[in-house]
Length: 232
Image (cartoon, rainbow, N blue to C red; front, side):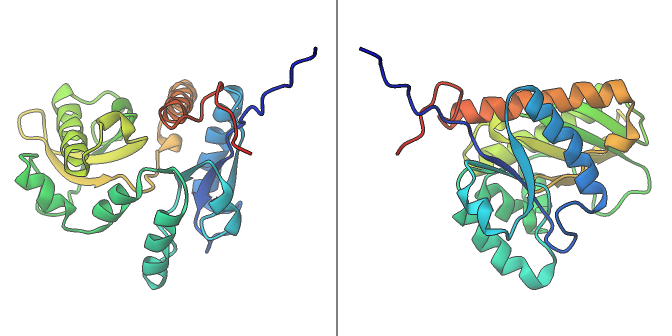
């Protein structure tokens, strides 16, 4: 007797962009082209859509690539983050990080912060809570102390949200100062720009592969890995 083939799940992944810019416009779309290719290399199918496209509600996993479309749509955007299934980063993280008071929260948690914008800042990018790449004032290989400040900010944010640090798919920490006095200027956990134009092609390729690995790990945590079955 021939056994029926299981209804294997092929997760539907959406990279949710800014509805004002259209589906294929702007630097974020250029960034996403590399991410989509990296995901496809791992056998994961992804597409870019404006976050307000109804099809985002049908996706198995939604990865934010826009902060929401402006102040006029902030309430609508926040409501949408709670309607989609399996949003990364999670909706409670998006809500907390969208409030400017998040920096004061991190300061209360012991993270050294800067009271205002800095003229020379280094951008640190993390995937899955681990460091990926850096660019800006300190170049692509900043001191460990700068990475430590960024990591401390991620750890404090994860503890506040009662999640594990690896559940933060991506983060961009802006850090100013020197190894002796490094301070966090900002932390973007909503839809960070990842600075592909500021690193070499080899660094970009490695980082995008790391991103794809962390997406695959997130799918496994959510029960959407390669052995999962789609419910009828």
